[in-house]
Structure formats: structure tokens, C-alpha cells
Image (spheres, rainbow, N blue to C red):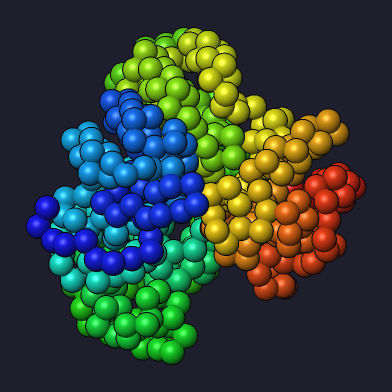
Length: 446
């Protein structure tokens, strides 16, 4: 690889960073997609060189935890599987999030994968873009029903249709649920991205690592005026347009996927995808190998990881869906929305993080058992400190650790900063579950 790895606290494939439970390696997946063969390589690496913990992240990537001293052997195995960047410095900036249903979602307006390939290649090969922060991120949304719209990105682009023409609405320092600043023709999407990133790098000071930092000082109108001068197309006014809402829950269960009419072969062969949640964002090598085998035997040979810390198996014949779901259950994945554990998020906790105040993974398992006993499935985020590493957006309910086994409970409230409105302090898991159980479903599960 042609460029040196820069210092950073963020893990990557080529930069393994230390934690209490060993090293962490982050494997960035293009659009969340990984082939069955690549999944087997990840499982083998976790088994041979680490503690066997594989994490699905909230940006649809994978992490291996508990890595020992054999860093080079682990990295070389993953590179040989085709999981690395095209340049060493490019690893940090491959931060492009797509819908997990890109190319197969029935509601999509456009297949975003070709443009995504262009963007990823540019991010890796353009030396100037290697100056971007390892946290600087882009979202490309094709209008899918299955889409994570709550994560904030430095630049987001969303497909829309106006007067029969496909456009890309875009916004800065936000997400597709926000009001867009303008739009460009779909074919100008790559040009727009390059212009926005180059302008950001020219105008931002070194300490202004994110778009929100620059826009806190530079008026948006000034940024857009300078952006217009760089583009070969006009910025289009789309005042009043709003991205249609995504459909909740499509990351878990069995759903029909888009079919090419020329390839349709009848109802029993109609392809579906099956979504399954990784328990608290974690897999072990046996689980990942089992899913990879199912992808090969029944699907299209690929897995798609999602921002919900879950995975999809696409290309399953509908007649085979029940058998595949049963095998996913046996592997320990969560395939039914009525499973309380499928709706809980927990960070690494005190077993793996020096900043953690509580063992969130174990506490989440206890909470899930209590909620399951009462037939409740609220979305709850357990965070061992205020950094909120496990969730990129505010959950309907957050348990913020204050001591081992003790949490403050917050409910999401758009009028309040941070995690929302404080409901109670210093709760045990049992006391927190009682308050969650007493809260009306319509308020908690919005």
C-alpha cells in the first residue's frame, strides 16, 4: 500500500487499537456487504488471533475484539480476503453508509451501488481526502423502505423524483429526515461529493474536523455560494420536499425483495431476504461461519450488515425461508421482533473498556429477561458512560451508567439535549425495568 497509516485513536483494519480486553480491529464493509468467503476469513481471524468476539457496529461494519500480539498475521489474512482499502491512508475515510437494501429494496428509487463504488474509490485514491477525520462520514440513500435515517452524517444525499427526473437531495451535518439544502441531477452526485469535500478541507481549520464545526462559524449560505462556483451544474431548489419515512422493523424477519421481471420464476422461487439481529451486537466465530454457510447454500453468497447491529441474508427462495430462519435461531441470532433482546443496544461495558462504569452487556441480558417476562419490547440503549459509543442516535429510552449495576433513566425528548428527559436516577436494572414496563407503549416505541 502506497501511503502511511496516520496516528489516530479510531481502530481500522490496518490500525489495531488497545482496549482492556485486547486489541480492536475495525473492518469497513462497502455498503455493509461481505461475501460468505470473506465472512469465513473474519471468523477464522477472530478464532486464531483474538478472543473470538466479533461485533456488528452501528455503521454496518465489523470489529474483532480481544486481539493478541499477532497483529500482522491477522491483518494479512483479512487483506488476502479482499477486506482492506486500496491505499493504507484510505482506510480511515471509507465512511460511506448505504441502506442495507441497496439494489434489492422494493421501494427504492435508484440502485445506489454504482455511485457508491465511485465514491469509495475516490475517497481512497484522492490524497487530499486522506486529510479528513476518521469520523467524517457520508450517507447515500436510494429512497429505500429499509433505511437508517436517524444517524447524522457530514454530507447526506437522498434520491428523489421531481417532474419525472431523478435527483439527489443533499444536506450537511444532519440526516435525510432534515430539510435538504438543495438538489443536483443524479448523474452529478459524484461531482457534488468531490466539490463539498474539497471545499470543506479548504475552509475548515485543523480543529474543525466535522462539517458541523465549520458551519458553526461559516454561514451555510456562504458555503453554498462557494459550492455553486465549483459545480458544472446548478443547485436545484426543492423547497417543501421531505424524504418519505422509512418502514420500521424491516431489519428483522422475512420480506420480499425486488425482482427483475426477466428473472421471475414463480411464487415459491420469489426471492426474499431474512433479517436477524446479532445479540447485543455480538457474534462468535461459529455463528458467523454458520450464517456464511447459509448464505452459500440458500442465498446469493453474501451477507449484509446493518446499522441496527443486525444482518440480512438476501436472495433466499421464499420456500426455503422457514428452514433458514430456524437455522439462524439455532445459531443464536434473533429473528423475531417479539424477542426483547432484539431491541436492546449495549456498549462494550467494563469488561472491555476502561471508561465504562458498568458491565452493560450482562445488565442488558438481565433487562431483556425481565422485559420478555412482561411481554414488552421497548428500544433501550445501555451506555456505560456519556460517550454513547453503541448508538449513533438517541434511543427512545437510555440507561446511562453511574456505577456498577446502577443507571440513570432518560426518555427521548426532542426539546431536551443529550439523551432526552431524565426520568429517574441511580436505578437498579429491576427498578429501571419496572419504569419501562409502566410506560405506555405509544410513548416509548415511537
